[in-house]
Every structure is written in structure tokens, then in C-alpha cells.
Length: 277
Ligand SMILES: NC(=O)c1ccc[n+]([C@@H]2O[C@H](COP(=O)([O-])OP(=O)(O)OC[C@H]3O[C@@H](n4cnc5c(N)ncnc54)[C@H](OP(=O)(O)O)[C@@H]3O)[C@@H](O)[C@H]2O)c1
Image (cartoon, rainbow, N blue to C red; front, side, top):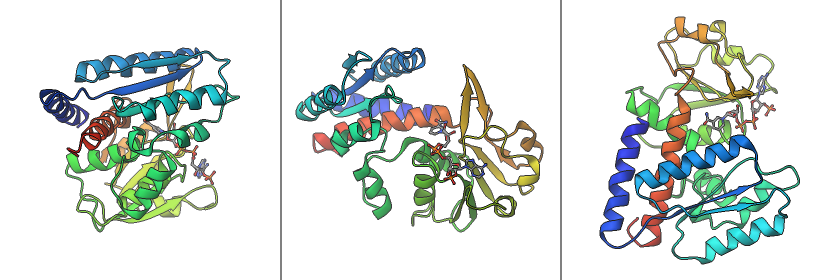
């Protein structure tokens, strides 16, 4: 599914270049956290492969909130920059959410700007949060019916559970579900997950979803992960595969679809900026 989206992005980037527009995705990194440096390098390389121009600004770990805002405002003012990615997390003395709010919402490739979350809540067009949009697309790609079905999302976090619940409850053929969100406030959350036809784990608690929490034959999507060093610890215990009708793989599940959606947001930002969106 991620490959198909990226093929579409490649074609759309080429179409823009053919009319003299170079789709541009700027990236910003603060500090020298090894993992973040690696992520940005991979995304920049992939952006170049897809045909984007990808200017990069790297601020030192000592950069101030004002320094970061200045970089983002410069990108906002540069008509040649269509999309901007601020690598998360930023160093502890900086406020990522405040920085994100400085960005032009139309160039927010993560779809996490407050304006874009508001657009999602209101059903207005705009960049969609990447992991939730990837999950909806993944279900559609694999022919999993969602409309009219019972979806339970474990977790109400801002990056995954909450926006996904909004997305899958929208009135569209690939959504339109009966969505329930459970969290730490629902002590008996397995009562809900056990009846879910589609269960999405979005808690960030390794192994929290076990076979006894899954309705036999249900579709299980593992969104939540935690890292122990470079080791990936998913929310969904692998033994759930024996009960589920379909399940995302431990590695290579919603990660690649998230990245694909990021580039889709970027090319759409470029299309909108030149009146072709
Ligand atoms: N694969 C990807 O590309 C990708 C992308 C984005 C996010 N993620 C992952 O998705 C996960 C969620 O991210 P987020 O930022 O949306 O989450 P978050 O803000 O950390 O929220 C986690 C949610 O899970 C709930 N939860 C935690 N422990 C629980 C428990 N024991 N029982 C019931 N509910 C529990 C929390 O409940 P309360 O609200 O009551 O505290 C909260 O709503 C993280 O693991 C993140 O790494 C993955």
C-alpha cells in the first residue's frame, strides 16, 4: 500500500515538474540526537528519490524557541517552500507544539497543526495526520470493510488514537464506522476490544493487547510502539495472530504507510500552493 501511494506521489511530483514547479519539502532538525539525525537523513533521501527538492536546516542543540520560530517563519514566507517537516522530538528545553503552531498549516506535512486537527474535526480538507490516514488507507487497500462496523481504538493520544477515531467516524465509504475509544479511564477496556470487528492498538504500552482481548476473526492493527534502544516493542503481542482474522506485521506495518502519507501531504501542499490541488 505504501509503495502504491509513493508511486502516485512520484507521478504527481513529475506532473508538477513538467509545468515548471519543483515541489519542495523543507526539513528542520534541532540538535544531534542520533535517531533523529538518521530519520531526517532517510526522509531527505526518499524525498530526493521521489523528485522533491528538500532544503534542510539544522539548528544546534542550544537553539532557542525564537531561533526555531524564525526558521519556520522564513519557510512560511518563502513561496518556493511548499511543505515543512519539523523532526520530532525537539530538545527538552523547546516546545514542539508551540513551534508547530508557527508553521503555515497548509505546509504542515504531519497534519498535526491545531488548524489541521480542527479541519479534521470539522471534516474540512487539509493535511491529515499521517499514521491515522495510513491506517484508513491500509484497511481500504486490503479490502477490509469499515463502514457500519465496530471499531475500537485503544488510546486517545493526539498523534494516533484521537485523530484516527475522528477519521474513521467520518461519512465516507472507507470510514463511516461505529468507533469506540478506550483508555486508562475505562478500567474494563477488554470488554470493548473483545467485541471489536476492527481493533487498533494506539497505547504505546508494549504487549498490552493479548489474544484474550481480541474477538476471533477480528482485524487487528498495531499502531502503538515503544523503543528500547533500537528494539521495537509493539502494543500487540505476536500471539494475537492466532486469534485475529488479519493483523499488521510486527515490523513494516503502519510505519511505511505513515511515511507514505507524509509525502502525499507534501505533494498535495505543492499542488494547492500552485492552484492545482
Ligand atoms: N508507527 C508509527 O508510525 C506511529 C506514529 C505515531 C504514533 N505511534 C505510536 O502510537 C502510540 C500512541 O501515540 P500517541 O501520541 O497518540 O499516544 P499517547 O499520547 O502516548 O497516548 C497513549 C494513549 O494510550 C492510553 N493508554 C496508555 N496505557 C494504557 C493502559 N494501560 N490501558 C488503557 N489505555 C492506556 C492512554 O490513556 P490516557 O489518555 O487515559 O492516559 C492514552 O490515551 C505510541 O506508542 C506512538 O509511538 C506510532
